Image (cartoon, rainbow, N blue to C red; front, side, top):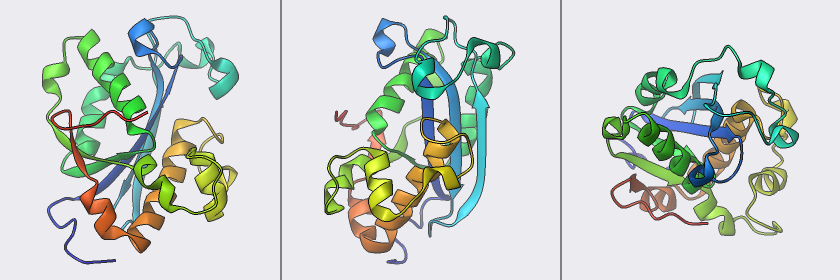
Length: 200
């Protein structure tokens, strides 16, 4: 890996949300959040995960398996935001299909008048480099993971569509990119929300 490309950062914060659905503008909300911290070289440092009690009934249980009962005594998103913000601090924030997660982040903060707490931060979307992984049928995280030989069931968490598992899988994809194309990763870092390009 080229040295010095990420010297101004503490490392990477890979994160994932599970939600009640796909449309925050229609009232869908976050029900689980996880972050995996990596060093500037991509080495694992720590992980953290929490269920989130949404201000609406649970949905999409058939996808992520999270029930109303599981989140009934969990913190609300505003109570978790200080933890998330601290883990993002001075790091490159990473997600697969970051547009999805960051749109939910904006909606959650806007709903409790905390959008002003969102200091702009650097973002790398692992989806942007998916076309560089040859032979995959699509850009889904699970397809890229399969191509790289990453088994989600070997990772912490409850498997695919669990925020902790998906954060660890995204970390492996990022590590693969860092090993092969560190300059490309560096050149595809954006600042959210200042110049972030929401890509479907």
